[in-house]
Image (tube, rainbow, N blue to C red; front, side, top):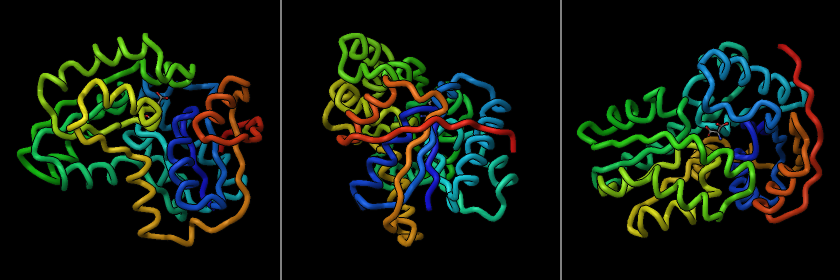
Length: 257
Ligand code: DGL
C-alpha cells in the first residue's frame, strides 16, 4: 500500500491523479498540517519532519512511499533512504525533470518553495539531463498559504501571481515546472498569467506516470485513509473541494522513529 505525504494538502494533487487512474486504489495519506509550511524551513528540519512523517505511514502499513512534496524531495531523500533502506520511495523531482528536458524548446521556468528553489536541485538536474537549457527559477513562498486557505481563485492570489511570474513572462519560457505539489491547485491562475502557449509540467502527474510504469501492482484496490497532524475543518473542506468527494479525516500523532 502506498503511503503518500506532504506538509499539508498539497500532496492531495498526487492522490487526485492516483484516483483519476484508479478510483479504488489503496493508499494512506498524511498531511502534516500542524507544522506546515515546510518550504521556508532549513534542510535539517525538513529531513527530520520527513523521517517522522514516513515513520508514521510505515507504522500504519505503508510498504512504499510517495514523497508528495518537492521541498522534502529536494532535501530529505538521503535521510529517508537511510532510515527506510528496504522501502521503495518515489520523489517528485526526477519525473518532472525527465518530461521538461525532453519536451522543452529550450527555455524552462521552475517555480517552487524557497527550500526547493534554494536547493538548486531542479536547475542542476535539468542541466545534466540537457546541457544548454536556459533555466529561470523563482521561489513563490506565498502560494502555499494561499492554497492552504483555499484562495485558489482569489483576487489577491492573482495579484501575487502577477508579481512572482513576471520574470518568467519576460524571459518567454516555453515550459514551466510546477515544482511544488500545492501549485497544481493554482493551475488556472498560473496558466492565465504566463499564457496558454506555455506548457505547465504538473509533477503529480509525472510521478504517477513513473509509479504506473515501474509498479502498476501498487495501484491495486483497498483502503483509503486520510490523516492530518492538525485535523482542522478548513483543511478537510479544501481537500474535499479539490478531490471532488467527501472524505473522512483522522488525527495523526507522530512519534520519533
Ligand atoms: N507541497 C510542498 C512542496 O511541494 C510543501 C510546501 C510547503 O509546505 O512549503 O514543496
